[in-house]
Length: 171
Image (cartoon, rainbow, N blue to C red; front, top):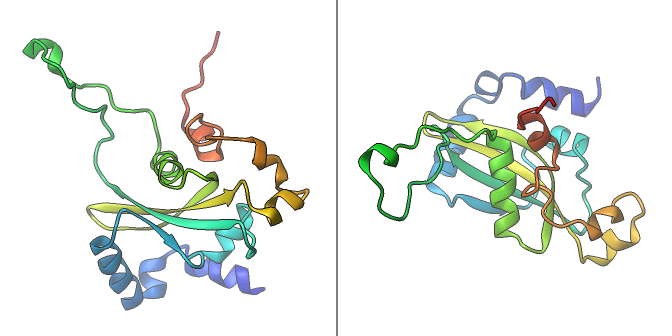
């Protein structure tokens, strides 16, 4: 097996394979900010399979999400108590929400993809692979320079996790 296969095997059950490192990492991340840029991907195998390259112009962002029902925000104005209810749960997956938050925080970058890196009883973490649209090395690379003319992929539901979680409409 190659190195990436060993890494992939370790991430199939990270609590057992990483042990105390996993617990310490989750505790440290829970204390940290909700959106943070990281130097290197935590899961190099998954990041590489989703398009990450270790070169300038690629950015990896870790996003912390609360693990609770993703309901619509509360109304700002006054309503009758009967119409104040918020029963609708957003039809969006956690990775999709993480990609949107990362794109809003890093406005010069576009989200390429995202992957799971951890969870506790209260939080979930996803790492979002982002590409700087204006970086010269990205503009010069013919494999990725298509993203230079694209804005707001996650916000418009064009990433893979967004497409998976959208409700299919049959006409």
